[in-house]
Length: 458
Image 1 (spheres, rainbow, N blue to C red):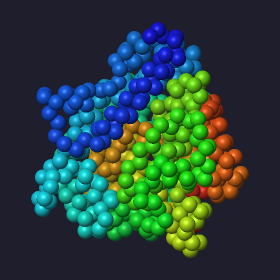
Image 2: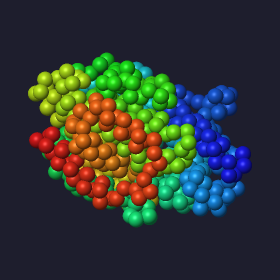
Image 3: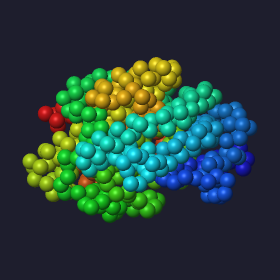
Image 4: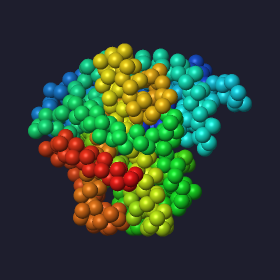
């Protein structure tokens, strides 16, 4: 491909992104020992799926030289991000193996992975199951700590070679004038924790794993289908034809482990809608930055639907009183998960300073976010620190701001209003606004969201 043929380069980018996401799903599903010497599939899995031609140093250099061209500039940010992930792939693969490798645990009839233990800690059906898994997870921490720290150390070191806009805490659309605000996510995360500390302390369970269990909304049990199928997701919006013409592809929905599984399914659908709305005439690189706020805005907006009382009444068929209980359970779940996401952001910043500083912050924040019994030794393991944590966290408030505007124009059941859905499709099909989003706007929305949680939990 020749540089300057942006259509072909953008198509190559789209294919690389698809491959990268598939590989991420494969790594997250690792559940058996791998033989890298004899198993060709395992050997392939251990290699980065990113095409070398896309991230070659000459390509990166040439794209930077052409930064006056908006498409070249947007492509350069993607290529830098993919270069970084390619360099880090080996340590990421090793960490995924450590998470997924089954191990014998005393008292269990079958081996279980650390990922399986974490799943039981959060979603075990009985408190004794969650308590036992939490104890066992503590015993296996060392298995993950070393590869997790090694991966983080490599990431922080190699991130120095890419622009800040491609680093883990960047939020592409949050700007002050024409400049990216480098500490926007951290500022918002620290303020959110401070603002919601009182609510959380009154709501948190006595044990950290029980607070985590709240994030599944275990009290919201009524009205849900057996699982959130693609048909059910579309039925939430009353009109299935509003997605007509969008290349959404088949929707694969995993079995639920709590009420918020339905929120996650709707959130994933919202991101798919956002991406599918891009017209062919608009390059992917321009429509969506790798550290984009917009896709997370759609995720948050669509996920928030399940917390609406109108959803509980009109979609789940609950009575008014049951709908209020439903809203309370979902508010507790969303508040807990939002504070864990803020914790990720603060820990990312602390770990960049030093792992010693991070461990100190871990002890303080674990107690603050989850309550009693959370160990400082969980640093680099829980919460997991991921690229894009800054944009994902800020997306919560961008989604809340979008919801506020939609409710103002179309009432609380905006998601069943064809005009509101048409507006969303139109907005999702455009390039991001040049002026970006002001941090002050997200801070005002955070204050309103805190008030909404307080009202629901009161």
